[in-house]
Each structure stands twice: as C-alpha cells, then as structure tokens.
Length: 179
Ligand SMILES: [Zn+2]
Ligand SMILES: [Zn+2]
Image 1: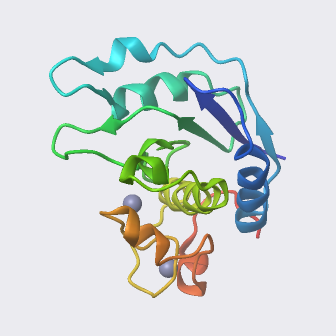
Image 2: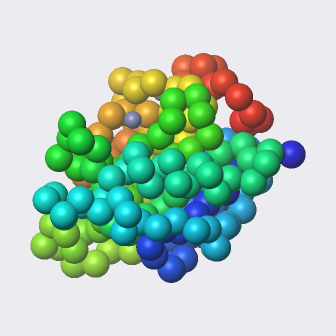
C-alpha cells in the first residue's frame, strides 16, 4: 500500500511528530512513515534579502527524496518560508502531486509574544498539514466553516478551522486516499 512520508527539515523530530502522524492517518487512511534521513540542503534556498527560505525550492528537493511508490511526502520545516509573491507562507503543495511542505515557524505562540504552547502548536501543525496534503489530493480551497481546506492568511485563521476535511472535500479527493 502506498505510504505518506513525513520528513523533518532543519528540525529534529519532536513532540509534534506522533500527533501529526495520527492526524494524517486518521484523515487520509493511508499508512504514515517517518523519513529521518533525507538530503535536503536548505541553505541553498535561503534568501539573504528576505531572511527567509524559498518554499518552492525546498519542495523540489523534497520530492526528489521520495522513494518509488510514495503516495505523498510532507516536509515539516522549522524555518520561515516564502514564495516570491507573498510575505510568508505557512506551507505549500503541488496540486494533485506528491509533495507538500509546512513550516512550524509561524505556528509557534512564542513568535506572537505569547507563552510556548505545545498543544496549540500541534493542533495548528496538524491542520496545516491536512490542508497542504489536501492540495496534493487535488483539493482546492473550501469555504465550509471548520474544513481544513479553508484558506488561512493569519495564524488566527488556522485556529478557526479543524484538522478534518468536510464531506464535500472528501468526495472530491483524487488519488490514493482510502478513507
Ligand atoms: Zn491552501
Ligand atoms: Zn471542505
């Protein structure tokens, strides 16, 4: 059975990994595995003017790490990501492809002057991971309240949605998800 790989990028696997695996397995019904050794050179993707990392370039490197038969590969980065037309992104995905990436950086309460909150960070990460993986399953943004495919511009937007996809989105999934 094809698998979904999770690849920590520029971060050690931490407390967020197990809840993330569980959330993805539950939503998409595919086996989830960790890939802890993947040769991604994020320094190549650093933009010295913006002091951020180019999300699309990391995504390309990530896709090259996918073993044959991979269903999806999801990178979890700890650095601040951008695409040229936007100030920052929480993540990026190939629509209908195999690769997706999310960043922990802007999901952390510390960035907003609030105390560290591991549970909140896990929840936000799960939602953004389900969101970006949804794009790889061919899903577009969805306006149904609470659906993980709601677009999020600010971190507060993420807190308004869930780590589940609505029945409409589930019906539009293309590819290998069995759930
Ligand atoms: Zn999106
Ligand atoms: Zn939806």
